[in-house]
Amino acid sequence: MAAARSHEHEGAAVTCVDFWCNEFGMRARIALREKGVPFAFVEEDLRVRERSDLVRRMNPVHRSIPILIHGGRPVCGSLNIVEYVDEVWSDQTRRRLLPADPLERARARFWADFVDREVYGAQTRFFTSRGEAAKAAAAAELLRHLRRLEAVLGDRAFFGGEELGFLDVALVPFSAMFHGYERHGGVDVAAECPALARWVGRCAERESVRGVLPSGHDMYEIHREFYDIE
Image (cartoon, rainbow, N blue to C red; front, side, top):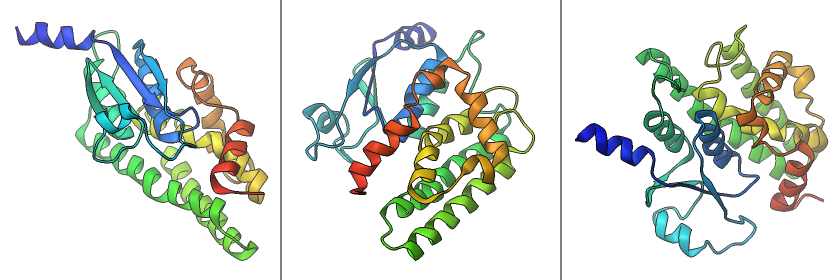
């Protein structure tokens, strides 16, 4: 009976509440596509200050997106959603995003948290800094973090090894901002982190990634609006 209930839940309706340029929400949509899970997309415009009734009901604590709604029940937090998708939709035909080895799983989660705390934090400071000295300091910090992740990647095709994995899904949405890094402050990721740039290219060959990531131009233009950049 438990197995039957689990199978029934797996086939329940899936909705992703997100905004098209939200790097965190892209993770959820990439994971769903990677697993071949059909889902409805409900857009929550982050340019509007007041959150919708749907978001307030489904995420009353943080009132933030992304939100995955599965069978009427919400799952919140981007990395939490990716793990949930990985657990619910893994079988003989769909491989796991997280490594099988407990130590490797812990490492993948550690570096995904590093992306959230360090990369996103430095990116925000880079775009919000006023004055050339502050911008240059933020750019240097951002590059340090990207180089550290490039060292973690090493000579592998993906952070997950030969296939796209959890850490790849966590980081690749931020690659949509690489064009913006160069436009805003002359940070050329392809020149500074060539292995990481080649990794982005391999990720972009996958339909799950290609179908979600916006163009670098569109990402930079809307972030100029978010950060009030002239």
